[in-house]
Length: 172
Image (cartoon, rainbow, N blue to C red):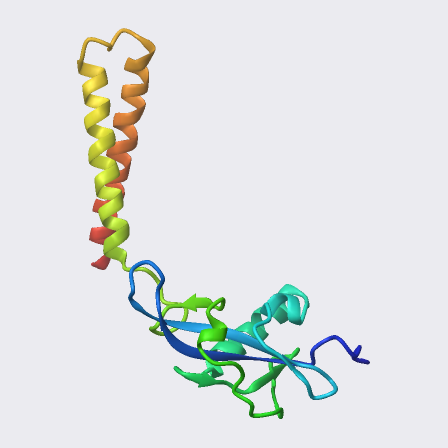
């Protein structure tokens, strides 16, 4: 396969610490650099646009780029197939020049949100839907089309709360 002179042959992730704009919390920012066939480097490129590929190749390359990137600093160069390749060791622009980079969570990559958050939302939705449904079914609007919507709302609330009960009993 022949490379065109303007198409990158490898990419890398460079991580650095910064603060969020609104909440002023510490965040880990990740910027991407692209290595061209002539040895020059483009800084702050879009990972998908730098090396377009099929979705399976993109997933492999993105996983390898992020898994090999240190907590702070530049990771190794990764080619289109997800393999580490040799390239220049230049760290690139400073933090102030990379403010446009996308923030990434400071913890391990691919972290799933807490299950408690989902339970809280589901509990809140279930109680609110059940309460609204009971109000519409029992109240003065029970003989109108809103009474039917109240019954549907009450059933949705019961289903949401029943889903919580079945999830709680799954452990045994």
